[in-house]
Length: 287
Image 1 (spheres, rainbow, N blue to C red):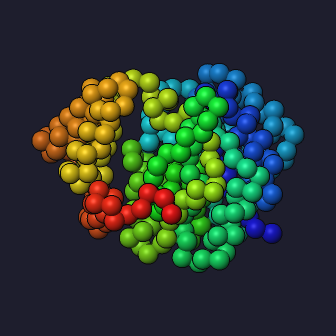
Image 2: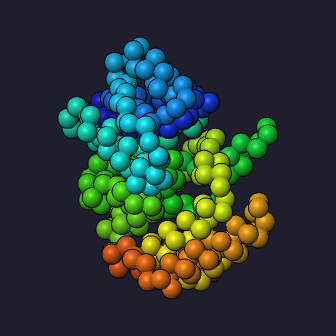
């Protein structure tokens, strides 16, 4: 039997959490443990989790104290609160899964079989789609970019990269580090991952969000040209112009102040190479 564990940090996801839990229950290969971390929810999320945990002995719930949520470090801290509850020995794969997703019954089996066929494959996901009315709109991303809401890790890869770092941008660092160590990463368009509350929905203050993202991009070592182009692209999204300008301003301000950057220079070189390939169309968005 394949052994994989799912850990879901959850904060105020009452509208979609039950959909995600039902999707896990309906998997053709179920996890040996599904650990739901109530990260200080103030809605009905905790009650929904406990209801399912009372019916399925492989579903567990842990509560973290209420308090201000910290994007990045807070998510990773909640993940490790669940990680510490794992009792299964010899698990082969681990999943960080958000609580606002929908996916098909074969979602995890597909990734397990892909990793069985390719021992170099260390990290996978589906492609995220956002619902707009009665349509699903694909988030355009390169095929080697694994989506943060549902990261499926081979255990050997997870341990080789040192797990998840409690910083903003953890979901870029893990992927880039894995690639620099020789692991392959992949997201699959055939694996539809409906994401109900993407980052822009969860962080409604676009001004604060884009300024923060600019600073995070500096911390991660984004190539300045890529950061500029990304900021210009954001100016075309609502609220028009100001969001992108704040993103660029956040990046430049962090640079002028001499804010610290992530210390792995090899990872930063690798990230910049990927970004330049993407800018100059040497890296396909979809395969």
